[in-house]
Image (cartoon, rainbow, N blue to C red):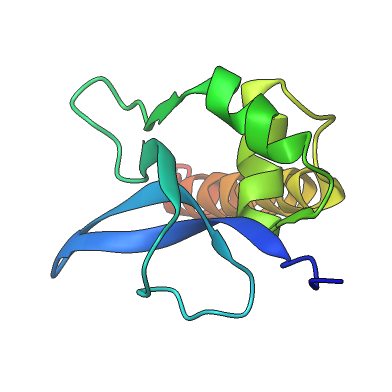
Length: 124
């Protein structure tokens, strides 16, 4: 009986220095990131464009086809991306990162407020 091969849906890095973009691909799970892919099913541009948008293009038909095979694993970045696309529930790390960013922004706002209030010295 032939062994079922485990497949992975993952991101592969493309682009050049300081300008990365990723392809969403199906490949064998135990192969390296840059090895031969079975099929490319999407792309992801992580750097914001002039409208401050990160662009994602995914063929959901092909994603459904490969995901329904049952012998497919998703990498964590793909799980997060599909959660943000609305295909899966949001990944727990997305909530954690959002809370950390909110706390960091709050601290920076308090620091700015303290600096501004210390600069305002009453003139007598």
